[in-house]
Image (cartoon, rainbow, N blue to C red; front, side, top):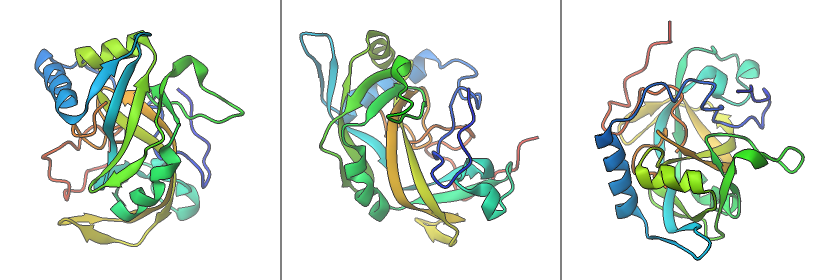
Length: 231
């Protein structure tokens, strides 16, 4: 994978393959749970071309999640420790403002940042619709998948979670949300792409969050517990 530019507009989520997200294999039970979650969370259908359409899907949610210092935009200028874990709060009010920025953006297999100057055509597997909206606690949009291999991953449960790639401005004002302490707040969220991943940072209720590069925080975990830096 490649390193993202270290700038204010750095994407919040790194290349999932580079961070070792896909080490290990999901069990059959995991796959069934993903597939069932998808069925419960959205209405989907295929058209005559074989494209998979999802009428409404959770693509992110209000939450507090762990981030390595090196994942945070402008971390060097902010004097952050690259391997320290910081808890970041993604507020509902910021997701609501960000909803229009998700409209008509590409869907990628895993995380690949996109721009007009550097389109990631080889890994593009579909696009989001034009109905982005926030319905607490979720950011929602419709989806269209146009790649047969990606559709098979979704239907089999091999990769059924979604991870929004976006830029934001970190506001290091600490606080607590829903009983969970955080170190910084994500402001001015601007979406770049949506990624299909085996496991997302936002959890299993964001299915076909963010990619789970730390790969330790999941639904039901004690998110108030500060993680130790990796060895």
